[in-house]
Image 1 (cartoon, rainbow, N blue to C red):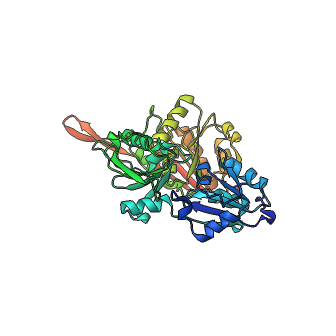
Image 2: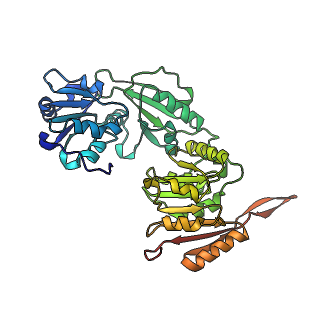
Image 3: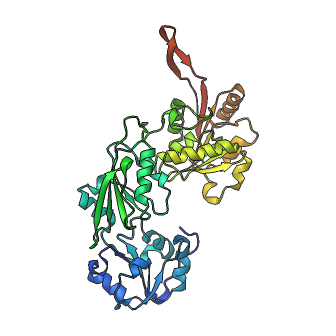
Amino acid sequence: MSSDRPVPSADGGPVAVVGIGADGWAGLNARARDELRGARALIGAPRQLGMLPPECAGERIAWPSPLRPAVRALLAAHSGRRLAVLASGDPMFFGIGRALADEVGADRLVVLPHPSSVSYACARLGWPVEETEVVSLVGRPTDSLALSLHAGRRLLVLSAGAATPWEVADLLTARGFGPSLLTVLEQLGGDRERSVHGTAGSWRHPQGDPLNVVAVECRPAPDALRLSTVPGLPDQAYESDGQLTKRHVRAATLAALAPAPGELLWDVGGGSGSVAVEWMRAHRTCRAVCVEQDPVRASRIERNAAALGVPGLRILTGRAPEALAGLPARDAAPDAVFVGGGLTTPGLLSTCWDALAEGGRLVANAVTLESEAVLADWYGRHGGELVRLAVAHAVPVGGFTGWRQAMPVTQWSAVKRGDER
């Protein structure tokens, strides 16, 4: 949401936001038609504006690209005029309605939705809408789809254009879901509606209409790596040079960090980025900043994030705590901080602790005596919980089996109280 005051609509009245489908003018109800006829300015995509008949006499204005940064200026330029905005399907479902509500305020909008492409697709496929996950690739990386790949899941992918079905098929195949069934539904609700079918691994259909939705029935290949929805992914899910918070310790670390929707994590000393990645996998709205001073490792973290469905992970290449000073305001107040390395660096823990608001969580892991002493000191001053995590794996010992002990990890976790500075 913009930090400035909303754009006033002055004496032009509310802004009408009219959802329109592939059936165009014929699919609109009387209220929507009246709003479009009466508007002095009509804003929409060229395709949508071209669906309107001559009786809609208002000035026709095509959205520029990129769209989102232009919304405020365009609305301000037409303030005082009766304004109507065209949107695809339901304007409040991955549509322009959200941006308009941010700018003019929800009370200045009259939203007239049309059935969304998701409703049409589920109707054609016989899928329950409430059990179908929707992933938008409009303005989003294709890699973000990987977060939703689980055996038996049904997905609807909102396409960015004609190339999206091929991009989806390629990603599914690369992630071990080549047997998944794909159905591409084009021009839903219109006279030119059609669908094509196939599997991701053998997709051969030529590019079709850019107005399409991709339905995916997820089927993993027999050798696909199983990626759970809870923390503690297999270590082999990550590309690593050995600097990796191992699976069982990682699960305990994420449990202490306690991610919740919309929250921000600082992962300081990223290594392979596993804690930040699994924080973001907890919910699509979770955000994370990963701080790593080694550029080679920073690049590796970026690849891990993309492969595991969270390409939005922000990677800050630099040495903490100095690198943290350059964060923008939206990233400078974390809800939780994980320190996986560099505990003996002067000022590191204090910088992280000071950045937390009341109720913020800090979790730090140590494997050396020197780092453990730092955590013991902070535990003495701030309380919280100090635990030692020890993991042993069964390994062959001659013709028998024995235990091989991994290095124990000392973990301190604490919640910042309101009276602490």
